[in-house]
Image 1: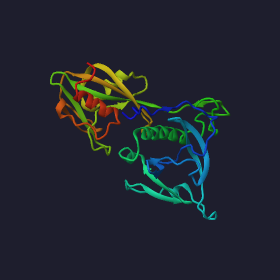
Image 2: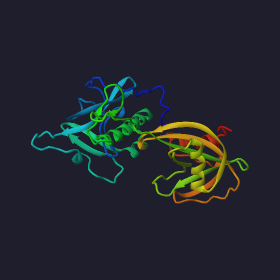
Image 3: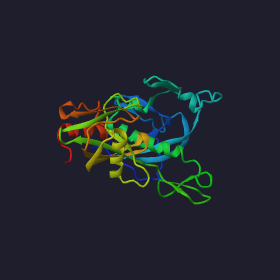
Image 4: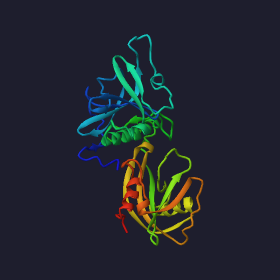
Length: 306
C-alpha cells in the first residue's frame, strides 16, 4: 500500500522551530497541482535555493532524515522586476494530463496534477506518499486562516501542529475523515462483491466504501454502507488494515464481512455496477497503492481474515 515505503521513512513530529536549510525540499501546491523539477534520478521537489521566489515556509515532516516544508504565501517575480508574476499566472488552467513546463529565472519547473503523479514512473512510492501527506496538510492550512468561533485570524501554535485563535483561544487541529473499505464475501459461493462508481472517473474495480457518520461505530458504518449501496445485509464483520489517504484527507479502515440472507443486489445512485466475482476472476487495480486493491488481491489469494 501507499504507506509501505521501508526502508524509507516519514516522521511527522511537528518541529515549528526547525530552521530551513538551502537544500531542504519545499512543497509548492496550487489547487490540485504540485511544482516539481526533473533530474538524473527522476522527479524531485525544488529546494529553497531552487525557488525564484520567497514565501512563508511551514515545517511539515522529516522524510528520510531531511526536513520538508510547505510554501504557503508566495511572492513571485520574473527576471524583470517590473513584471510581477502571480501564482495564477504560473499555474495555467489545463485539462491535459501532461505536466506543464514553467521557466523562471533560469530554472525549469514542471507542474503536475496529483492524480497523474500516482502513475508516473519517475517518482518513487515514498515520494508520492510524502506528496499525499503534504497535500493533506496544505488543504488544512488553506482552510484554517480564520477562527470558526469568532472570526479572528489564526496563528501557528509554537508547540504542536495546531492553529490557535489569539482572541478567544480556540484551537484547531488537522482534519482527518474516517471511512471504511468493505470486502463483502459470499461464504456459500466463495465470491467477493466488486463495484464500480457511478460518478467518479475511476476506470477500475473497487469495493463498497463510505464515510463514518456522527455517533456511528466503524462496524455500524460497514453494515449501513453495504445496505445503502447494495441492499445486502452482512455479519461477521472483521477488521483487516487501515491506510492514510491524504489526497482527500481520509483515514481508510478496511473490513471484511459475510453476506447473510438474500444475495440479490439492489444498486443505489452511487454505484453503476456491483457483481459477485470468484477468486480467480479478481483483476485488482493497476498499482499496489490502495487498501482497496490489497483487499481484493488478499481475497484472490485466500489470505483474508476469517
